[in-house]
Amino acid sequence: MRRRPRWIAASAVAAILPAGQMSAAGHTTTLQSGVYSEAQARRGESGYLRACERCHAVDLRGDLAEEIPALAEDDFLRRWDGRTLDDLFLKVSRTMPATAPASLTAREYIDIVAYLLKANGFRSGPEDLDADSARLQRIAFGAAAPQARVADEPTEALTALDYFEIRQLNARFVHGLDSAADQGTLFAGVFTADGVYVDAAGAVHEGRAALAEYARRDPDRRKGPTNVKHYIANDVVEPGQGSARGRGYVLMATRGQVGATTTAAARDDLTDGGQYWDELVRTREGWRIRRRTLVRPGASPAVPTVLPPWREPEGPIPPPPSVPSLTADDYTEIYQLYAKYGYTFDSGADKGYAWANLFTPDGVHVNAINPLEYLKGRDINALFAYGGLRLAGGFVTLNPAPAPKNPLSIAHILTSILLEPTEEGVVGKAYRLTGAVTPDGRVTLAPGGVYFDLLVRTAEGWRYQESWYLRPEIAVPQGAKRFVSPHRAN
Image (tube, rainbow, N blue to C red; front, side, top):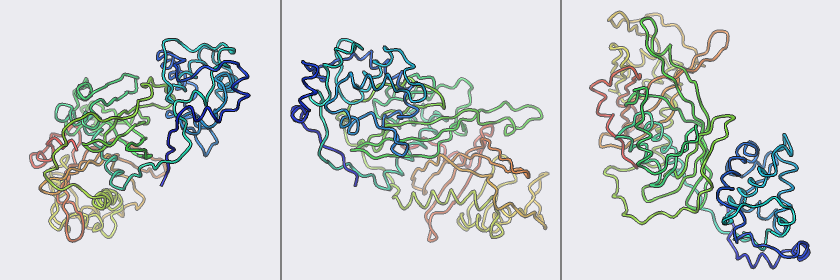
């Protein structure tokens, strides 16, 4: 189990501060008395994100593998214990950033120092911190530390179910944002009541009312149950004490207008992307995002300053769900079912039965793009996956000599899998990325559509009872409309 250090009083740290360093500057000002202003720390945060974040990370944790030191909490306070702000200012201003030392102004460097103080829990005051060396020498770490950490206290470990629930937050985020389901409340419910989303332009959307309004914005008039724009992958979660930090990759699709001779698929493309940086907390409602920041490569986002410790407001305990929740084993098996979908269909393995056996014996596959592609039962689905059916010209015919499929094909890449337990089973919703490998080895990747699935638990394990594939330009068929209802907030 990872351990988190306990706090001890500042007076105890003062007792271990070297006397020579205390007397070198004569009088020592207490950092905790507030030596910088909030406005200065905000300027410093912007400067940090421009000049320092690339190496030291947005959360100031650095990179141990690359020997880049952390600039927050335990490591930072231990490293600077007994030293003065002048030492820190000289270090930062003479050697940073590593790629262009001493390239900022003194004002920019001292603002960054103020931000580091803010990030490490030192309170602000009414005035800016000045870059005057004589004054900075009178302000020391150690005696001034608000709460220096020296002993150990357990950090709460995350369970497998915690990781799956956080992964489901990401799925609800993209489906809620792309569809604006339930007037934007599906999206807003992913956040705490006071949650913050910082978009790529640096605009801050705070509180569930503002978040729901943001989700409802639809300048292109594309939002709805089949809209597919955001793909999230590579979820990383680091545990804390009742909290966690997360990161994820995001790709964004641009949908082209369909012309007389151009299909929608031919006009769609992946045109944007970046990373999400999250602060997550466990609440009475389950895991929620307290702050999410979208950062594009090379950008300098104007994110909010460091958040104070999480304190959940008083409120009623939510009622238990009306249907049983999924266990960690359920999530594991269902995620595997979705992973196998692409491998088995794209390869046509076992003459198509590797894919057909992911369905119940009477399972149904429907592609709403092609009215002929309504296939029920394992034998007919296996024949289809193997390439033994022709679905064209208004007729379904047998293909007696199907061409072998490429076992390394990557045509069905499924992401952002949202799972909702219901009375029927589990309603799943997944986005598809469409990959292709050309004969000369080039790889293409394009946005696809969305799957609406009904999954049921059988003696063989979790299986598809129904799987409906829709694209954004296709109206939801009557048979799939029961899967489009707003999802539970939990």
